Image 1: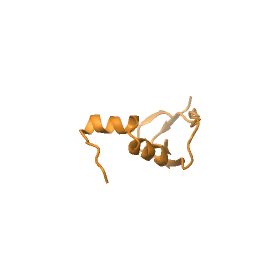
Image 2: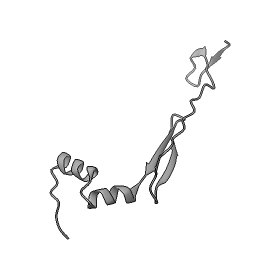
Image 3: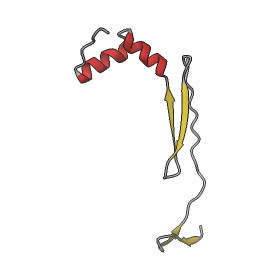
Amino acid sequence: MPLSRGRDGKLGVKASGGGTVVNITVINAPAGTQTRQKPRADGGVDIDVIIPRAVASDILNGGDVSDALETRFGLVPGGA
């Protein structure tokens, strides 16, 4: 492996390539599901999967997400 000098002036071995391929599959994604990719400063990518309708429906109908929010944050369901 050849030596090279980095931006900081240090001499060393430079690695390249070897990236990791990541496949994300959302099974049974409800209508309204969105995805968003954001590049990071370190060269990686953050991938967000957004399911707003499913989460909103769960909260409105007292599902698992609703229960978790109530338990974790001491929330009390109220009427409109």
